[in-house]
Image 1 (tube, helix red, strand yellow):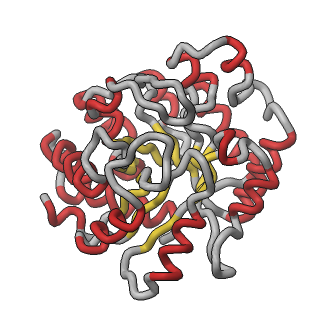
Image 2: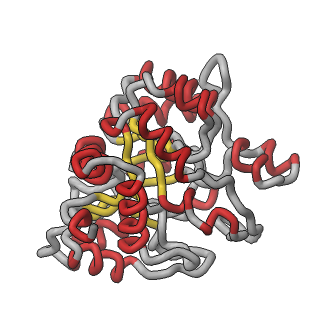
Image 3: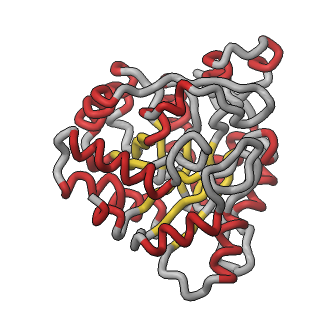
Length: 295
């Protein structure tokens, strides 16, 4: 199974500085990924634009074979859903050709997640959501237009199935071609309704792991658990949307899970045991990510 790491892409690693304990750090993750022969890793950060960290690695390890990329999750500590912040993220790095390869709508500061976490009404009222009949504000509209212009990846964030449907439609009207949808918290009907939208569906090791049941501080001082995706349901979802439209990631970095390369390997092993072929797995851990992120 270790051979699967060679040439693989894990687009979702939380090894940047955080407010809760990490299992590792940026430099160790890069070192392990390079030694394992991985093709690329994507850095995720709830507090800042991670393309700066990616640029730092490239600057000081110019002979690295591993590709390291980052982007912006539009959480409030990282500037929120803000057009100027996105504009900066797209050109953030030491070299002219560097910057964010993805822009993500919030993954925690959304009405969908806040309700799961039983947050206060005042907190929920201030969270991001996607309106049903039109884009709710000019800021979101301008962000979608800019993502389309730069032809980078739109990550829809952690929102409901209906919100995903609406956001994808708004994104396509803006001309966005590359869309990644975190699908761990969707249900059967939502997966079926969304499968024909021409997007990529992301499933992560974190959401099938014990970490979902351990209260953790993801974006602020409050500790919360999150809904778990059962392994058999994962198999069902992959079969519904097809391996050609799935990206597997670790979403590791938190202290209660293995280091990212081990977590990713565990996930790959579990998916292999579900009956998916070597060819199918390589699509989901390499081919699809390379095409989506243009790496």
